[in-house]
Length: 94
Image (cartoon, rainbow, N blue to C red; front, side, top):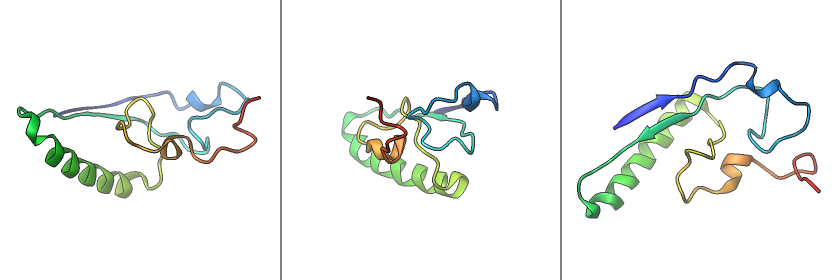
């Protein structure tokens, strides 16, 4: 297992007045965590992913509450709503 925290500048969300898709709310900065897990046997994947998802979700809720998932690091089956929030007229581009 390895992990990294992305140390973005506090001003990262204030470079543009135009609405963007991520993060859905710009009131608070979030710093993505990149967590890498590996196991030796392919048949362990189902058990490992189930346990890891539960543990990471619980820790994230305690630490960050409702923080949006960082799209580049989210697991493959996460709903887009968890990353980008609700689509509104402010975020929809014509």
